[in-house]
Length: 336
Image (cartoon, rainbow, N blue to C red; front, top):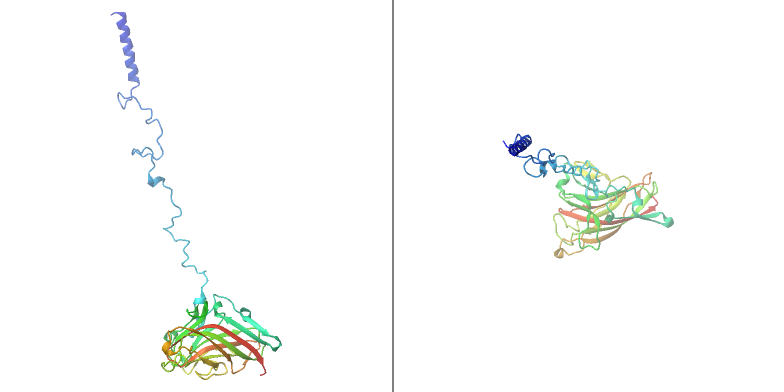
């Protein structure tokens, strides 16, 4: 064999040997891809052909503000620390007929919470209460009815509420309302005077009462007129006026008289008819003022305390509703 053919065969044999040595045993005849298994896989690559796109259910950060699976700490529906708005709530006493309508928990110890003035050397002192400033420790009550009846029978309401439209003022008043189903009902306010007066001293009480009434004049009503048969009374006593059971009925423990007759604890100032003729009445409130000197002097106790009493004694067998707006009382010391 000529030498040149021998060299050609030798060269071809060597080339074949090199090819055989570099072949991928798993993929015969295919050269390996430099980007294949030798490169580390991308994080989140599931081999689904997403090109390394992270699946939404594994990479989405958890919203730690979502607390739907546990109680919401911001829910204050059961928060008992919120102060109760007692200017529109009342606390009924155990006997079911007296309500303490307070002004948002405001403490009122006496004259310091009112507008009070002294009259030089005479010793007289005037105290004033404007119910636009809340109840100011005036307490509401109802009496003169069978002791086995409850207040639901009378629809008794007593609270501080916005005055009705049509008056020459805005703000609030002390609202009292009840249905006289016992034919003889006394609906009242009372207040303790705790300081500012001399102990064991008799005082003449001069009242100025500003109130709003919707009872028209000269009307005919059940048992009596809605205006002229509802008597406004004012006075005071040394002891606190309280309801007591007397022969199966609730009565006051102090003598306020009965209907058109007064007593040592309360005397008649007039009636609540508002002067609007019955035939022209539109069921609207009208502001009225009553000036009154209580017919009996009132003694303070040893601590210089006494109680004021203001209310309506009704012979009208229907509903009476009033807004007490302002009360002024001058305490004038007198000889016993």
